[in-house]
Length: 396
Image (cartoon, rainbow, N blue to C red; front, top):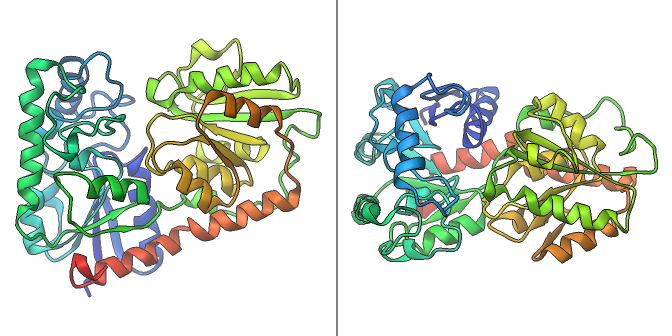
């Protein structure tokens, strides 16, 4: 079979971009001609002038179209910006889609599927909703997105039109092969009016190479050997309401009244509102994150919407367990990692922190081994090879 693969993603770094880059690197190690085609090599937040039209469109989505009380991301205007990515795709190559918003139009995807092998990894709900990336409990995408809570009322017809366009793309038989990183996302897609009836294979997202490295020596005991327990929170934006960091901070504050050994450390942009409770470490590199996880006794994942957050696997690669809110694919990630807990209410998280004890070296090593086996990039790349070779979506 053709061993050329082009991963298509809006951004080279961050979120789904890191998955595309990791898979491409693993495939190159296996002898494939694999690379990522992207619009910018950072994010619109960090590089707003890298693509001014996309920045303007994203601002339109965020500040004009989106309803004030809806906190998930929205992509409507950004999808209308034309790029040249499709012109860079070699004839006969395998096209692997990741983040398509602002990168490829539905029409271009449809045309590509007629001339190329196309695999589409869903990284959030946007491919089968009218525009939101997470519906936050709304089930409108299962029918026709009537009275959409994600946008201001005057723009609701845009949502219905967008949902219809996505459904139309799949009305005729499509050879596109669909993958979701979690059963939760696959089940959500299967319940939608867009992708209902489509076969969706579940393959976890891979660990980046930096987190697959085996430490040269056993990591220091969390807390540097002192009588303290380090609790971590990691989010791209610590002030993002969907990341719900305030819940982790509140639980920590309550738990520390009983368990005085607890210390809170937060990683990510912004979050100044939490500086009086925990240590703000800012944005860390992958190498710095490895050291951070190795020093943590537990990671808290309080997000209100998640698919398969790689931070759970990243923390596990360094022997750190996670306490995650029961939402999206969090439960599957904890189960795959082999250690950690799911909570439903704030009081449950408080209890987990109150009773937190340091894990033994043996327990941490067990988490490391499991995570590196399940989420290893070569393992995941092999599973995708099977998808590439399948004769049709139904053969997966």
